[in-house]
Image 1 (cartoon, rainbow, N blue to C red):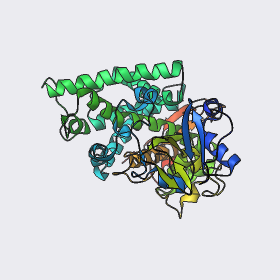
Image 2: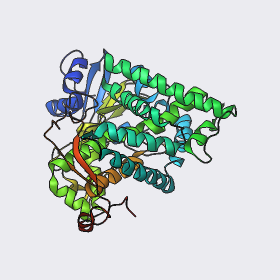
Image 3: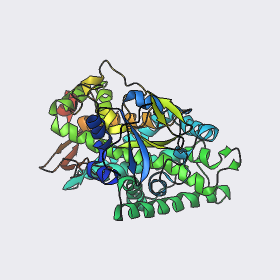
Image 4: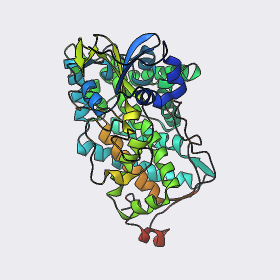
Length: 432
């Protein structure tokens, strides 16, 4: 039996820090393989790349998540013992609860809330000398997410909560101060949500009827109600990912600024927003890779995978594989005109099946929110983009345009104020 190709060097931890998102793809190219073995933090690790490997990775008979997520990520990004760490029946029961919240009606309700929040925010931006889109979008998304979930949020705490959700995400690839900030942010957010859960269960507060918060607060697994702490973790796993869409929105604004024809296409054709949003998710970096552990010894393509081995799936590299994507490093929404991604060839939010697997339950929310946001930027706002650094660093995980995307002279294109402009486009989706 052939041995899995070995990456050079005893341990690749420093190489991951140096190369970031491209680490796995770089090694696969060097070794001319879609699977190789290395050590990370002195732990034997198998790395996978491409759709065939993704189909293997998402086979629940081959891989489990238990023990695959490092504690440092659980204590910042997703919470300890959250749904992402579960397998089999426990995972499916909790995943079904998440999936029940992703109906078209519920997604539409979130978009309705967001439409109001985007317009209110733009009216404030008109009176500001400049706006940094990334934190501004975080605030918009935080308000909307809390309203949608049914989590009470005072206006004077919006920035704190939005910043804390952002710090949890920023910590997953960080060390030192970044990691510490993420841990503190998680503790604050968990205490905030946990207190609300306890108050509702003791009758001191009420959850909005039929809201996601109510569903989670009274959700029972095989052992009864989730603990207040576990309930808080999972409610945050609804709130945090919605706020994190600010990253994609900021990258979408960068694409609009750098490719002027796309703005006109978005103004003229509603359906183009879907192509544009898909390309934002494919092209721009968010998560570098995902982890699991081998469930039992097995063989694949002649290679042996020993039980318990940590295995990483290349997300960014698969999304930029030239075997799958023509000119993969070019932003080109038209590539999706006659192609819908398969469960294993485009992996910005994981792959495989939603319910039985670990594909992100909120993927369609993410896609819908990006579409709405880019239509808002293209149709409803006029703004200047001053000289700024819109580059991003693939060695930083996660990453973002360095400037956060600065806008100046923001104007909301309401029909009564900008009739000629409004008539030139196919209608602002936020105005009547």
